[in-house]
Length: 62
Image (tube, rainbow, N blue to C red; front, side, top):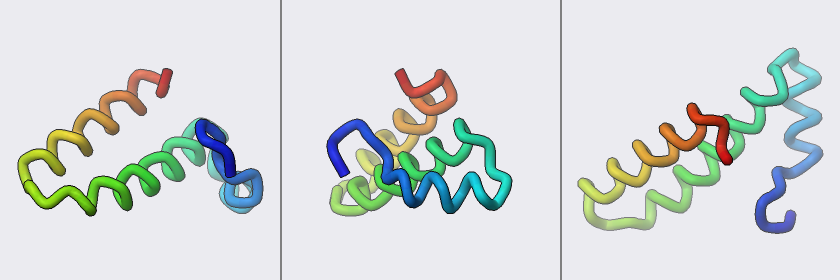
């Protein structure tokens, strides 16, 4: 999928199971961010990045 877009098939899968669109999008973004952040070796930086992603998602992800 292109940068900035979530996989439509994954969105469909989550939405078909009753997960609201905003929550489904947040789950997918959080999952992707988690995979990327796992590559950061410094534990403090990993935690800071995950906290920033969480805050960004809570604020609407824009």
